[in-house]
Image (cartoon, rainbow, N blue to C red; front, side):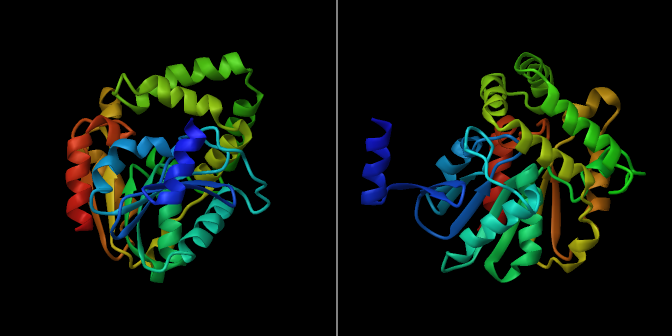
Length: 284
Protein backbone atom coordinates (compact mmCIF):
# COMPACT_ATOMS: atom_id res chain seq x y z
CA UNK A 1 0.00 0.00 0.00
CA UNK A 2 2.80 2.45 0.89
CA UNK A 3 4.52 1.79 -2.43
CA UNK A 4 1.27 2.40 -4.32
CA UNK A 5 0.74 5.62 -2.35
CA UNK A 6 4.21 6.88 -3.20
CA UNK A 7 3.87 5.86 -6.85
CA UNK A 8 0.58 7.73 -7.13
CA UNK A 9 2.11 10.97 -5.93
CA UNK A 10 5.28 10.56 -7.97
CA UNK A 11 3.11 10.25 -11.06
CA UNK A 12 0.60 12.96 -10.21
CA UNK A 13 2.77 15.53 -8.51
CA UNK A 14 1.44 16.03 -4.98
CA UNK A 15 4.41 14.44 -3.26
CA UNK A 16 7.53 12.90 -4.72
CA UNK A 17 10.10 10.58 -3.25
CA UNK A 18 13.46 9.93 -4.86
CA UNK A 19 16.72 8.22 -4.04
CA UNK A 20 19.44 10.44 -5.47
CA UNK A 21 22.89 8.90 -5.20
CA UNK A 22 22.14 7.66 -1.70
CA UNK A 23 20.03 10.61 -0.58
CA UNK A 24 16.42 9.84 0.28
CA UNK A 25 14.55 12.93 -0.93
CA UNK A 26 10.89 13.73 -0.35
CA UNK A 27 9.36 16.74 -2.05
CA UNK A 28 6.09 18.48 -1.17
CA UNK A 29 4.47 21.87 -1.65
CA UNK A 30 4.89 24.59 -4.25
CA UNK A 31 6.85 27.83 -4.27
CA UNK A 32 10.45 28.84 -3.61
CA UNK A 33 12.60 25.84 -2.78
CA UNK A 34 13.77 24.87 0.70
CA UNK A 35 16.12 21.97 1.37
CA UNK A 36 15.89 20.53 4.89
CA UNK A 37 18.80 18.47 6.21
CA UNK A 38 18.38 16.43 9.42
CA UNK A 39 20.99 15.88 12.08
CA UNK A 40 23.13 13.02 13.32
CA UNK A 41 21.43 9.62 12.96
CA UNK A 42 18.08 11.28 12.23
CA UNK A 43 15.50 10.63 9.56
CA UNK A 44 14.13 13.42 7.40
CA UNK A 45 10.88 12.81 9.29
CA UNK A 46 12.33 15.04 12.00
CA UNK A 47 11.03 17.89 9.82
CA UNK A 48 7.45 16.59 9.42
CA UNK A 49 5.80 19.30 11.53
CA UNK A 50 8.02 21.98 10.01
CA UNK A 51 7.18 20.88 6.48
CA UNK A 52 3.46 20.74 7.27
CA UNK A 53 3.65 24.51 7.75
CA UNK A 54 6.27 25.49 5.18
CA UNK A 55 4.83 23.45 2.31
CA UNK A 56 1.82 25.78 2.23
CA UNK A 57 4.04 28.42 0.61
CA UNK A 58 7.27 26.66 -0.31
CA UNK A 59 8.49 23.59 -2.17
CA UNK A 60 10.16 21.52 0.55
CA UNK A 61 12.89 19.01 -0.28
CA UNK A 62 13.45 16.83 2.79
CA UNK A 63 16.64 14.77 2.82
CA UNK A 64 17.59 11.70 4.79
CA UNK A 65 21.35 11.24 4.60
CA UNK A 66 22.90 7.88 3.67
CA UNK A 67 23.38 5.66 6.69
CA UNK A 68 20.92 7.58 8.87
CA UNK A 69 17.41 6.66 9.98
CA UNK A 70 17.33 3.38 8.06
CA UNK A 71 18.59 4.87 4.79
CA UNK A 72 21.30 2.55 3.37
CA UNK A 73 24.90 3.69 3.81
CA UNK A 74 27.22 4.62 0.94
CA UNK A 75 30.97 4.42 0.49
CA UNK A 76 32.71 7.57 1.77
CA UNK A 77 36.34 7.60 0.56
CA UNK A 78 36.53 11.37 1.15
CA UNK A 79 35.01 11.07 4.61
CA UNK A 80 31.47 11.72 5.82
CA UNK A 81 31.36 15.51 5.53
CA UNK A 82 33.02 15.56 2.12
CA UNK A 83 30.72 12.84 0.82
CA UNK A 84 27.57 14.55 2.08
CA UNK A 85 28.66 17.93 0.73
CA UNK A 86 29.27 16.36 -2.68
CA UNK A 87 25.94 14.51 -2.75
CA UNK A 88 23.90 17.52 -1.70
CA UNK A 89 25.83 19.85 -4.02
CA UNK A 90 24.96 17.59 -6.94
CA UNK A 91 21.31 17.63 -5.91
CA UNK A 92 21.22 21.41 -5.51
CA UNK A 93 22.90 21.87 -8.89
CA UNK A 94 20.00 19.99 -10.46
CA UNK A 95 17.64 22.74 -9.26
CA UNK A 96 16.96 25.63 -11.62
CA UNK A 97 16.79 28.28 -8.92
CA UNK A 98 18.46 29.24 -5.67
CA UNK A 99 17.45 27.32 -2.56
CA UNK A 100 17.14 28.05 1.15
CA UNK A 101 18.85 25.59 3.49
CA UNK A 102 17.58 24.50 6.90
CA UNK A 103 19.95 22.17 8.70
CA UNK A 104 19.88 20.65 12.17
CA UNK A 105 23.02 19.51 14.01
CA UNK A 106 25.39 17.97 11.45
CA UNK A 107 22.88 19.11 8.82
CA UNK A 108 23.55 22.66 9.98
CA UNK A 109 27.29 22.13 9.70
CA UNK A 110 26.88 20.82 6.16
CA UNK A 111 24.71 23.85 5.37
CA UNK A 112 27.58 26.13 6.40
CA UNK A 113 29.93 24.29 4.06
CA UNK A 114 27.45 24.53 1.20
CA UNK A 115 26.94 28.24 1.82
CA UNK A 116 30.67 28.69 1.26
CA UNK A 117 31.21 26.24 -1.61
CA UNK A 118 28.17 27.09 -3.79
CA UNK A 119 27.08 30.58 -2.67
CA UNK A 120 25.49 31.30 -6.05
CA UNK A 121 22.98 28.49 -5.40
CA UNK A 122 22.03 29.39 -1.80
CA UNK A 123 19.57 32.16 -0.90
CA UNK A 124 19.96 31.88 2.86
CA UNK A 125 20.72 29.28 5.51
CA UNK A 126 19.07 28.45 8.83
CA UNK A 127 21.37 26.62 11.23
CA UNK A 128 19.56 24.77 14.02
CA UNK A 129 21.75 24.27 17.10
CA UNK A 130 25.04 23.69 15.32
CA UNK A 131 28.49 25.23 15.64
CA UNK A 132 31.31 25.68 13.12
CA UNK A 133 33.54 23.87 15.65
CA UNK A 134 31.55 21.51 17.85
CA UNK A 135 34.34 20.69 20.30
CA UNK A 136 35.14 24.32 21.13
CA UNK A 137 31.56 24.85 22.30
CA UNK A 138 32.37 22.69 25.31
CA UNK A 139 36.14 23.18 25.55
CA UNK A 140 37.46 26.63 24.56
CA UNK A 141 40.99 25.19 24.41
CA UNK A 142 40.02 22.58 21.81
CA UNK A 143 41.74 22.47 18.44
CA UNK A 144 41.11 20.17 15.51
CA UNK A 145 44.42 18.48 16.28
CA UNK A 146 44.14 17.98 20.03
CA UNK A 147 40.63 16.54 19.73
CA UNK A 148 41.67 13.64 17.46
CA UNK A 149 42.55 11.25 20.29
CA UNK A 150 39.29 11.76 22.18
CA UNK A 151 37.21 11.66 19.01
CA UNK A 152 38.93 8.46 17.90
CA UNK A 153 38.23 6.86 21.26
CA UNK A 154 34.55 7.83 21.10
CA UNK A 155 34.28 6.52 17.54
CA UNK A 156 35.83 3.17 18.46
CA UNK A 157 33.65 2.85 21.57
CA UNK A 158 30.47 3.53 19.62
CA UNK A 159 31.31 0.92 16.99
CA UNK A 160 32.36 -1.67 19.58
CA UNK A 161 29.18 -1.47 21.68
CA UNK A 162 26.82 -4.42 21.57
CA UNK A 163 23.28 -3.70 20.33
CA UNK A 164 22.07 -3.85 23.93
CA UNK A 165 24.76 -1.46 25.15
CA UNK A 166 24.11 0.97 22.32
CA UNK A 167 20.35 0.97 22.93
CA UNK A 168 20.88 1.60 26.65
CA UNK A 169 23.27 4.46 25.90
CA UNK A 170 20.79 6.05 23.49
CA UNK A 171 17.93 5.74 25.97
CA UNK A 172 20.04 7.53 28.58
CA UNK A 173 21.37 10.30 26.33
CA UNK A 174 18.32 11.12 24.22
CA UNK A 175 16.31 12.82 27.03
CA UNK A 176 19.11 15.39 27.12
CA UNK A 177 18.42 16.11 23.45
CA UNK A 178 14.69 16.79 23.63
CA UNK A 179 11.99 17.57 26.17
CA UNK A 180 9.30 16.15 23.86
CA UNK A 181 8.40 12.87 25.55
CA UNK A 182 6.30 11.68 22.62
CA UNK A 183 9.27 12.01 20.26
CA UNK A 184 11.84 10.27 22.47
CA UNK A 185 11.16 6.70 21.26
CA UNK A 186 11.26 7.90 17.66
CA UNK A 187 14.64 9.57 18.09
CA UNK A 188 16.05 6.48 19.81
CA UNK A 189 14.75 4.22 17.03
CA UNK A 190 16.33 6.41 14.35
CA UNK A 191 19.68 5.99 16.08
CA UNK A 192 19.22 2.24 16.30
CA UNK A 193 18.22 2.07 12.62
CA UNK A 194 21.24 4.13 11.54
CA UNK A 195 24.47 2.55 10.36
CA UNK A 196 26.74 2.64 13.40
CA UNK A 197 29.97 3.19 11.47
CA UNK A 198 28.47 6.10 9.52
CA UNK A 199 27.21 7.73 12.72
CA UNK A 200 30.56 7.23 14.46
CA UNK A 201 32.50 8.66 11.52
CA UNK A 202 30.20 11.67 11.32
CA UNK A 203 30.66 12.37 15.03
CA UNK A 204 34.44 11.99 14.71
CA UNK A 205 34.57 14.52 11.88
CA UNK A 206 32.31 16.98 13.70
CA UNK A 207 34.60 16.84 16.71
CA UNK A 208 37.79 17.33 14.67
CA UNK A 209 36.73 19.88 12.03
CA UNK A 210 37.14 23.58 12.79
CA UNK A 211 35.22 25.67 10.25
CA UNK A 212 35.34 29.00 12.07
CA UNK A 213 37.93 30.70 9.86
CA UNK A 214 36.13 29.61 6.69
CA UNK A 215 33.07 31.60 7.78
CA UNK A 216 34.94 34.74 6.70
CA UNK A 217 34.26 33.58 3.13
CA UNK A 218 30.53 33.09 3.69
CA UNK A 219 28.33 35.99 2.61
CA UNK A 220 25.06 34.02 2.60
CA UNK A 221 22.57 35.39 5.15
CA UNK A 222 22.57 33.01 8.11
CA UNK A 223 20.08 32.56 10.94
CA UNK A 224 21.41 30.53 13.86
CA UNK A 225 18.85 29.09 16.27
CA UNK A 226 20.61 27.98 19.44
CA UNK A 227 19.63 25.90 22.46
CA UNK A 228 20.90 26.33 25.99
CA UNK A 229 18.29 24.94 28.38
CA UNK A 230 19.66 21.38 28.57
CA UNK A 231 22.76 22.79 30.28
CA UNK A 232 20.89 24.83 32.88
CA UNK A 233 21.62 22.26 35.60
CA UNK A 234 25.33 22.61 34.83
CA UNK A 235 25.40 26.39 35.16
CA UNK A 236 24.72 27.33 31.55
CA UNK A 237 22.68 30.46 30.98
CA UNK A 238 21.04 31.81 27.87
CA UNK A 239 23.57 34.66 27.89
CA UNK A 240 26.63 32.43 28.26
CA UNK A 241 25.61 30.04 25.50
CA UNK A 242 24.63 32.88 23.18
CA UNK A 243 28.08 34.37 23.74
CA UNK A 244 29.61 31.06 22.66
CA UNK A 245 27.55 31.12 19.47
CA UNK A 246 28.49 34.75 18.82
CA UNK A 247 32.18 33.99 19.30
CA UNK A 248 32.09 30.99 16.98
CA UNK A 249 30.16 32.82 14.25
CA UNK A 250 31.95 36.16 14.58
CA UNK A 251 33.65 35.96 11.16
CA UNK A 252 30.41 35.39 9.25
CA UNK A 253 29.48 38.50 7.28
CA UNK A 254 25.71 38.28 7.68
CA UNK A 255 24.55 36.31 10.71
CA UNK A 256 21.65 36.59 13.15
CA UNK A 257 21.63 34.51 16.35
CA UNK A 258 18.48 33.70 18.32
CA UNK A 259 18.26 31.54 21.44
CA UNK A 260 15.32 29.19 22.00
CA UNK A 261 13.51 29.83 25.31
CA UNK A 262 13.35 26.30 26.77
CA UNK A 263 14.29 23.90 23.98
CA UNK A 264 16.98 21.27 24.06
CA UNK A 265 18.85 20.18 20.91
CA UNK A 266 15.73 19.34 18.88
CA UNK A 267 14.46 22.91 18.90
CA UNK A 268 11.80 22.28 16.26
CA UNK A 269 10.22 19.68 18.55
CA UNK A 270 10.61 21.42 21.90
CA UNK A 271 9.68 25.04 21.04
CA UNK A 272 7.77 24.54 17.76
CA UNK A 273 5.82 27.81 17.74
CA UNK A 274 8.93 29.87 18.52
CA UNK A 275 10.87 27.91 15.91
CA UNK A 276 8.33 28.49 13.15
CA UNK A 277 8.04 32.17 14.03
CA UNK A 278 11.80 32.67 13.59
CA UNK A 279 12.01 30.56 10.45
CA UNK A 280 9.09 32.18 8.64
CA UNK A 281 10.25 35.70 9.50
CA UNK A 282 13.71 34.95 8.09
CA UNK A 283 12.60 33.38 4.80
CA UNK A 284 9.85 35.84 3.86
